[in-house]
Amino acid sequence: MDNNKTFTMIKPDAVQNGYAGLILAKIEKAGFKITAMKMTQLSAESAESFYEIHRGKPFFKDLINYMTSGPIIAAILEKDNAVLDFRELIGNTNPQEAKEGTIRQLYAKSIDANAIHGSDSDSNAKIEGEFHFS
Ligand code: ATP
Ligand code: MG
Image (cartoon, rainbow, N blue to C red; front, side):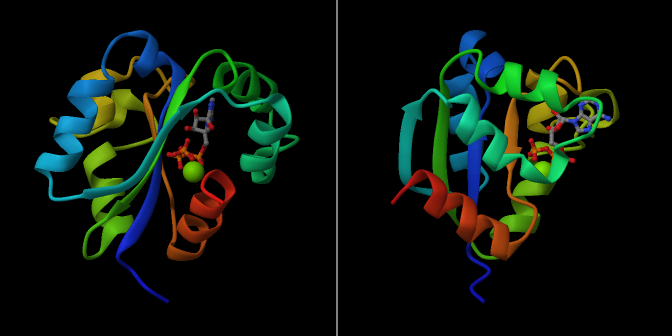
């Protein structure tokens, strides 16, 4: 399978806090090409479907409430080794543990509102990209 594409969402907290432009600039500076992008607001149904794997976990309800709380920016990004390089660029799920200079360390405050999503595998990148752009 191709390993040159990933999917991202700039999450509601980052859009709300005015970090979208800074985050997109950082993504482009890191060598990712934005090949599709849109601002949208997730319905509860689409957020639940997107995070289906976490259904039943203690944070699931808060995660859905948060992801539907305001607009997000969804995008498809291209670069060699896209999935892994992008996970490196965004940093640990918990911003408190994210490395210096990563997007979550710079622009996120908590594990619940962590500024950005990045696909965790090539197969999920494909599924998630198609979920938002088809
Ligand atoms: P994302 O899929 O949003 O890019 P991730 O891949 O780094 O994040 P996942 O394990 O897929 O992390 O979790 C999805 C989202 O669920 C996280 O971004 C976070 O907001 C929330 N989450 C995960 N684990 C926890 C937790 N232990 N407590 C609270 N929220 C959590
Ligand atoms: Mg994930």
